[in-house]
Length: 139
Image (tube, rainbow, N blue to C red; front, side, top):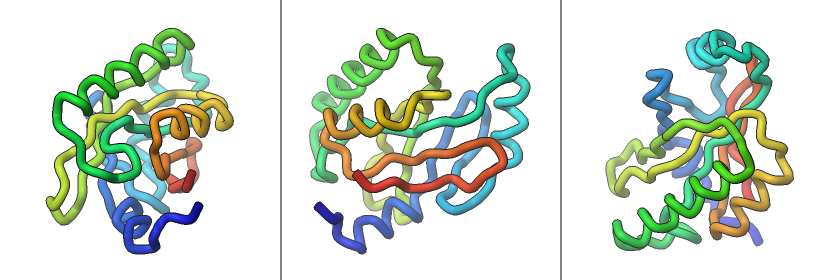
């Protein structure tokens, strides 16, 4: 299923924030500050990351309580899989949609990330590798 181009455009123009590293991720842009922060981690071996939310499935607005429950389920799933992750926020540049709580997950296999997105009824995720542009991946 293809998402309406206008909705994908909104995703592409959103700002994906990782407060822990004080960085904003933009689609189709490199982020040297994020790369530097990830290289400074104890493991020093981070190669890739995924930014994913469980809020507002199919891009349909849900209540704050429903989004909180979904986020906690997402976090529990990632925690059980023993992935390293940090809180994140996806924000519309038009401020016409509430910020969505998300996880910034390190070195998760792409097929697992895509399955999580499917399981939480998401339309896209943001992926990246050190030294490369952040990419929007449609589900």
